[in-house]
Length: 357
Image (cartoon, rainbow, N blue to C red; front, side, top):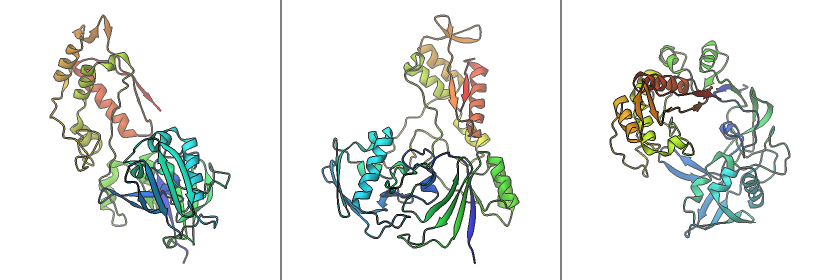
């Protein structure tokens, strides 16, 4: 019996080049794999295409590759092909250059020898990044048809719409029980939920939060929710003159009602953040308790030289204006911006310009 599923994802992509694609669709769709992957349960790294590694001095690394891996075009994956894939990732992606800091790579059989420009103890963990997924760079169409080592090979790609995937029978970790997968995109959470309810798709990623209760009540549906490392954050531009003052940054931080965002926007499917890292992570620092609220924000702004005049926080006769940019495709971000703007205007009357992308 032919087995297939239809999966609906939230972010679309117009290219499948794994070395530059920021939505990581090639890896999520099972086309590509990385040398190392993250064990989310134990919060540790583990081998994937690499079998083992060594680098006691943090600068000279030896990586042993699996010898039973084939690319989806039938070619064997060896150290030379991995070397070429890594070199292309470094060439195409500045962020990868900065993260890996690779000076030289040499290949011998199924062994890679890598030297970094400086001691980099975290080097191996950086290899979990989907943008260093391994592909056969002897193939030419990286944008529309990358050839990886994953359990599914690409049959067709419609940019911004969907991927049609077929099982790769020679997958090193055993062929999938599925014959094919349709990996489609729709950035509208409500539309994803409706597609699931109508039977147009089998699985959706990130359905509309408001629909979760009704989905759970449907005996034909299974809703899975898990904690992730994702953090919703407001990144401040330290190049802007007004944001260079720590008291202005503290004022903006004090205005964010994190619990209200959790309760009213994410409907309890989140926890309030104290910093960029989950408290369960070993390297997460302990943060001092911070006072929040509009009155606290005004105190910080006064320390920065602002005064409340004619209902506006001003300094040298100029009103404090902070432009904000956010993703139009993330509805929850728009709601958060609305909450933040309302809170600002209620007490401090700061003007906040929001641009969407």
